[in-house]
Length: 439
Ligand code: XLS
Ligand code: NI
Ligand code: NI
Image (cartoon, rainbow, N blue to C red; front, top):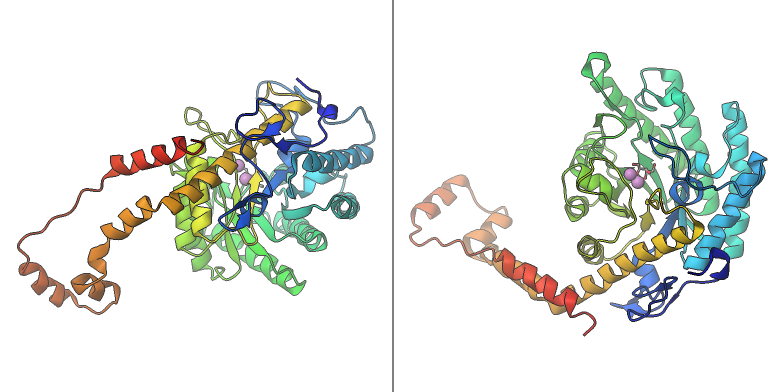
């Protein structure tokens, strides 16, 4: 197998290619349903998993190295940034995402950390312009440092609320400077482990206060993008406040934040909440809060956020169906919140992992477009609800009926037949479309 340095650019070679460092399905500039694949998919590189993660787990340390034989922290982080942009070039990825602590060394004080951060933001700006790359979103890591052990906006200590605000403010400023189109709030430790020490009402109100303050600041500074909540049911806390898409919608509605906030749906978080990935996307869509996706995959036999690179074509297909039906990404995109397995510890593995993830979603897009074009699934669904198109059904959806009228209508019914849902027939259509894609 070739070495990392020998691979200048991963290109599309088609499904018959056996070249490991080539796309089999992702052809960035190919037009599908009137749009380039790259614009449908809007792939983004995640800095934390790709540029910083070195394979450590609960039982053992690093299996990789991302210090590039350097000692000086500032030099290391500059080299990391160079590596990130070189990777995006090789993979033809247009966007990236980061936490504040991913891109710069943490200092001894908050001030020092912010200075290091801002210095690196300026450097990223230079690299962005040179490599023609864009920031999709950034976020503050308000969960790693021990001061956040009891949460950030939901910490029982108001000083921590202030520190968290300072970090988010710096990230919003950076987002504006780097042209990001979204700002993400993943809950981090905004949740709790036991009610014995938790004032849930105050913590919820404070979380809403924090988001409102961040929104007001961002809008005042001219940030036009989406503020995003990223639902996750558990981990690190037992009960995360942003459990799933429906919980987040309720929260945003209660605190009147729906105008500015949407959701960043992560596949692995969906399954941790015992939902299908597509279920979470659909809930977001029908509530008008779909924006962005953290593309990864969990392992159903393990109960945690394994953040694997996605390779499940069915899930990617159902995901891309939702994206296409939504009319595509606007301020969001597909961020690979995914890391190579601990045993896949070389730079080559990073390329191979992204190729697998990108090809999986490229397949998902191709199949989803075929499903729409084929029309059988849509037709079936449309027909299944036809009783709401006329007569009593139409009156129901037009809100033009009373309970008394329904009662007298129901009493007059003689032959009621609920038709088959035909699930197996529909599943066969999906398999048929998938496996005849390249015939
Ligand atoms: C953790 C989250 C995190 C967010 C960004 O589970 O997925 O990586 O995406 O803070
Ligand atoms: Ni995520
Ligand atoms: Ni996650």
